[in-house]
Length: 425
Picture 1 (tube, rainbow, N blue to C red):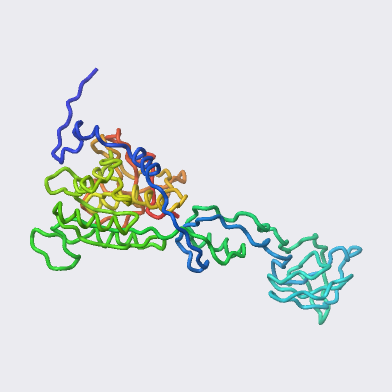
Picture 2 (cartoon, rainbow, N blue to C red; picture 1 turned 90 degrees about the horizontal axis):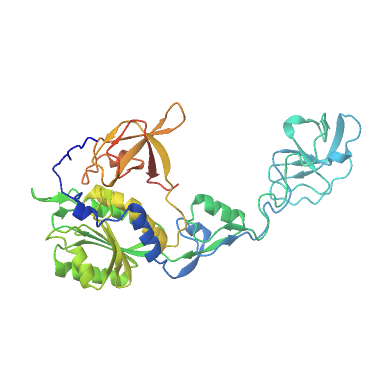
């Protein structure tokens, strides 16, 4: 057996065994979120037109069958196919005209037909609709050359859904497709969970508003506008956005005030083990519980989750890419759990366009861009050669994250990896 010497690389030392052994896996962290986070109480009934993005608190059931009556699938002529005797052609008298929204009051008998338009109620006695291009009209009569089958071009009552059937289950986040289903079911209002109250605290005395004046030792604030953007959603109520002071006493007051008004307190930075990292000590001083602190991922290792004074707490790293990546994996899962959202982040398999060489030890979450398909129909992604926790310049071009397994130090081009898109649908 050949023994290879370990390669020692310069860096933060976060892969040292004495540190790495305290980290939890991604799956373990997500399991803790699912186990410890409890959906908020409180519901409200709102008009369907105001429900986009909200989470259903009760199932939606159809109020009537859909369609509610037999109707024409296209413009044409309705008649009774059984009235056509012999081998044809047949001549029928046009005795009625029915447009969408009009009630058909004239029953059809024998060789009678009704001019009918898409969506209109099929007259009593008719069982087929022949499209207008397939008949020859002369004045008030039409000629039909081929006998239609019964039911031709008719959408039968209840063929889409019956009365009282469940259209959507509790826990569904309402998008445009779900709203369409509710409307088709005759449901004009829905019962949804109340909006989740969220407070955001971005730490760092060195940050300044983007574009504002700064000294050589200061940087522009990326986390506040970035996270405000992801938190500006219909099912969330962003009750506070503040910059935190890098002091124990200052953060103590801010986090205590936020926990009193919010269901979820999100902090960025201050969760490592340095002398200027005050967030975790403050959480403990406030009597909080930390369910996990540190996940075996890159970037974003310090990400933490817990509870403080009745509010859930999510501690994101301070570096912008780390904050964004950990929000995508853990923040979205936590919000889904707290809002009762039953949807899941959809991962799929993709193919790498280039080889990946890295130091094994933690699962690496690398921003990637969808770049088409190979000759076998497999989706290909591109990505940067390295991941830097503070670099976000290439993030706008990315479509999601690829998961590089913790035990892999080399993946060849064309390797199959998991991919989680930033957009859930």
